[in-house]
Image 1 (cartoon, rainbow over the protein chains, first blue to last red):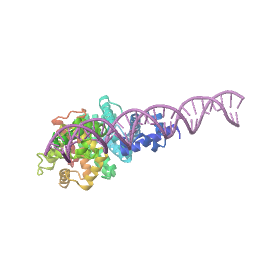
Image 2: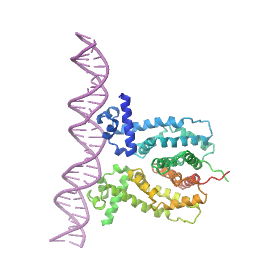
Image 3: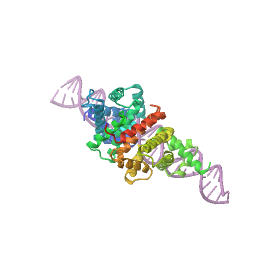
Image 4: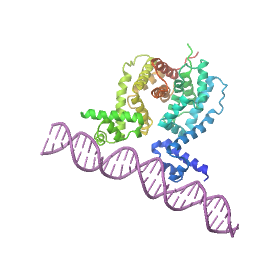
Length: 195
Length: 195
DNA sequence: ATAAACAGAATGAACGTTCATTCTGTTGGG
DNA sequence: CCCAACAGAATGAACGTTCATTCTGTTTAT
């Protein structure tokens, strides 16, 4: 097994165990076992458990963004761009339930809050596509004039909920249902025309 | 201190510590300390930590429902009923951040998933008001004809997100913003008229 | 006086991390 | 071409800490 394979195995094992059992249901010894390495070996690749957890998060983000942005055309109309991103994101979560569960665990932990604070205050890259989209939408008067965080909540809150429901088996999302859900999210953020 | 006071103190201490630090940042000894009782005393009131956690959850639910249902008129139009419930819920979370944080911790833990499964499959009471509202809305063709879980996600997903953002200080929700957010949620679930 | 309620010390299981040792592959002198 | 010497990767038993829970002696109420 090459060096990269070994790191890869550790990361994969950690992802699986943490996604399924949470941070505290994934002792280092168990991760080592599942990865097929000795307990001490993990520490040759990651300084400690916290570092492993954060690195794994970064890995996931890097894997995710290209997939979501695949086929994304910044010159399409706002609505189409939103539907593209929303659909891609929801599909990614459904097709990669381990990734989704891990991201949830991470976001609901102290790591996640810290990370979130950095992103919102310090404007890290990555979510920029989303920010731009929303800022465009507002300035074109296509979207409601609400603070960005609220637009994010309206757009992605439901998305996370339905992804979780699907993964836990509370609903089965087929293509039609995915489309209709994302369109409903759009209805939430779009400026309602007077009828 | 009467017997009920002592139980009350334990529950309050547990709520505070778990809401702020998570289940694993709230050791029994610390809860005992904060409650002003001995560590062993907790076990006179709760068989073990799990029982304490679940009982605390039930306490919160019982405290919450009356507040949210206060002033709720089942004969009002669907839209008004939805705005009432949504606003009341969001307000409750904002005014009781400890309760909110605890509920989040709970829902994102194995306890919560279990509980959720029971509710959705076994139809426990409590969320019935919400179910009725959505079923009404669908049959009156006021709401989109989507599975209940998805309507729930569209309605409450954003609500949880903004509550969290407010509590973490990422946004400050005043009365106007609360109203506009809930109205946006309504836009998400309501049937869009053709323009 | 008695028994229930209580506090906090004691207990043992579980965990993250360390480190002395083993294993593995590479180098270089003959 | 061979193998002795070596480097550093890998290992897992052992350590110290933390925690839920239990035990024990004391206090309190009746």
